[in-house]
Image (cartoon, rainbow, N blue to C red; front, side):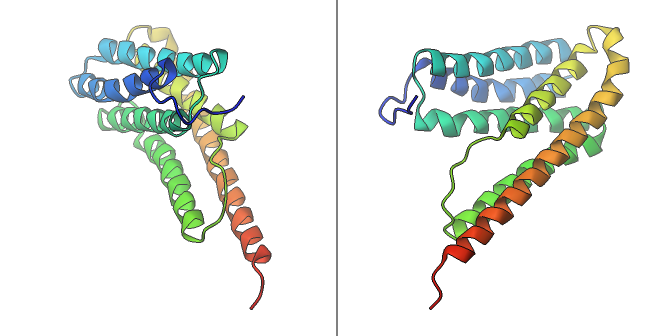
Amino acid sequence: MTRSPGVIINIPNLLTLLRILITPLFVIFMIKGQYQLSLLIFFIAGVSDGLDGLFARWFNQKTVLGAHLDPIADKLLLTAAFIALAVQQVIPSWLAVVVISRDILIITGIAILRFFHVAFTIRPSMISKCTTAIQLATVFLVLLRFEIAAVQPLLQPLFWFTTLLTTVSGLHYVVLGITLLSQEQQDKPEH
């Protein structure tokens, strides 16, 4: 399926915009300690994330805007969630640092590749998709713990697994970036 550059306003893109717009609401509820409402907002954001991808594929409504906006919406929500949870001391601060550092590393890598005019397509790898899924699950279960105490014993192992997968994903992108940069340097004709 091809991406349509022409259609910008469609259901998948509106769902992605909804996710971006409700992220501040999520943070406000977190700051106020209203974890039940935070959980509801996060659940709505998660459902909208699943639906925008489903609708984009099902109705052939993939757009260039959507391809760029969707990961931005994910990163915005996850970064806000991990920072808010760490500030509220609901999760260990080191977990938030690992998650956010990976994203900063990826953005820095993209900037370096663009600076050196390396041609590449931004496409999430399978490990990146798994990392995003486990990070979303971590936030969801941390918030669910306020409603269902039985979730608590799962959290510490989940924190370590999230850290491991996030680190491996970050290293994967470092290796990928170095490989792309090396290939670009090798392909340049010598003067």
